Image: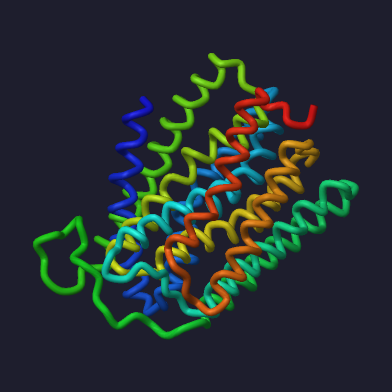
Length: 324
């Protein structure tokens, strides 16, 4: 089941990136907007499903799983996800630098830092205030979508042929793009669920703490689509799509998943959750400073993975009980 889920995610990521490129091209969106909105929305479905399904099921560990997904997903994405993207840039020998529209990095990371800061501050606030903040996060994401759609000009370069109609020349029909997109999203969700189930079984056998599972293990599976997609886009030279996929997903998670955590859980993630959240915020601020001019060497992006790797090692060494 572990291998099957991984294979599904890899195959779905290839189909998804190809379909998203065509959808963005047909809608005349800028490369950054395609990655930050369309790709981010589609690949964020697995990590959105995990806390929602956990809360609906009302299992004993539901609150821990939901809280951990809200904090753990962006941590892995901005840490390990950016590091893997940086590695792909390093291996791209013709140009070992990531190149972005300057406003894209500032917009995506700025929204994430602002929203995620509110998510962390809300830990000490009463429930009625948290609910109001959760609604504000949804409104903030709406404003972010509008600003992203207005930024940059449409891409003029036609993507590679649609995989569903590989032998057809020219632009594919809209129905084929939408069909491939829906099929790939379905494969992403199924593959991620298979992967999560396999990891859940492993964690249960090891008697792991539910919050630790949600902070580390679940994001490893649910963030694989973003990671694979970004590597594929770096390989094809679409840096705006690659970074937008990662940072746009983080913005989505901080706003939409933040709304779920603040509104539908007691929102008391404890020491492990708070520590992970603070490290995530630190990584995001460092990336914003690094990419303030719209360009960075891949080797510097690799450093983003260090806090996440150190956190995981510390959690494993302490048995998931860093705070006591």
